[in-house]
Length: 114
Image (cartoon, rainbow, N blue to C red; front, top):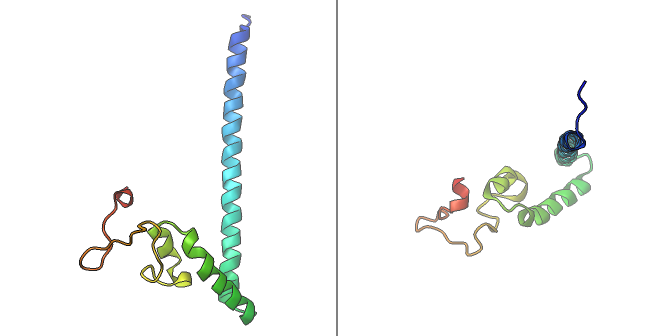
């Protein structure tokens, strides 16, 4: 039986380490995503159930105040239009100049094409 050289053993162990680190990173991303989904589900459930009208109003007001600056992409703002108002009502941070075409539509931006 041929013994592996020290360099071969080190290379094999480094490959194992890299594989384990990648698996750990994937598990952490999965856990983070699950936490975000569950937290979002809780917030939406509280808004829809409305068992405590005062709390529901405060939560909705807070979301209308905090979400617009947090959502930087038009597609993200469109997802939350029912909570924050239509995208036309929300100032765009994608295009700080607020440039629009002559017909009132937003000018096409290269980053949106991707």
